[in-house]
Image (cartoon, rainbow, N blue to C red):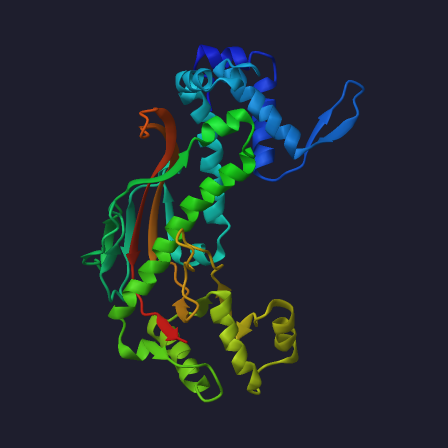
Length: 367
């Protein structure tokens, strides 16, 4: 963030104030301990509440508001509107970092998603070097998220289209200035909303592509001693078709169904102990199990199926191509109520695009 207005330069005129503020917001958003020194040089820990109040005070200074001004809705809204770009610049930077961190921290997402971040110099194009191409591209890039098809080249490039995705945040900026919102929790919630949206698109790409799989790669049944050989054959088929190791992907509830095979002689005492400690085994006969943390959608339904296990090849040419333009932007949107009382609400926009390029066979076991 640059101090590119006279007002910001005045607010942060005191030497070291800007750096201290950025350190404060970074530490608060990332859950790090915050310390300061008193006049006697004694170090003391800053509480989360005090940190939030310090951020609120800086936002008030940027808007030129006093404690008394906060009592007037009209005064607040005029000040917020006048200084919105300066407030947004601070908030957008923290949101950008948390979104990137959210993608980096997701093991299952990174296992089969190739990410291009335009803000880091990546491009829209992805190199395709896939001699085992079997399917079309499942394109989720449009605003309406309709499924479209295009042919995958055996070698060459594909270009992922991006479009704006938005999160409505209502009057939250006003609430932050009033000190009624936990800044760190709010930033995390916004970032989580974007991360879950993209992860759900990637997951839905796998679900949609099941119809393209040959019958031998789609199996159904309760896992038990009676179905163990069929399950093992599915794992072998995927590994042989792709010439690579595989892993088993699913929610914790789905992965726990593999526990039923622990009644068979292959299960070791260590694996049985894993079941007691975590609720599921960590691997199945040398094949890694990877958990998709279950989430709730906005409707309250589970975002990912608890009745599906995916046998996924480990490949450098990852299935999902995701483009993130790397920068969030907050916009003011005027909304009107029945009494014609206008107020400023806000939306956070970020341009993203997702294509699912299924160039290898994978397996699906429906429980």
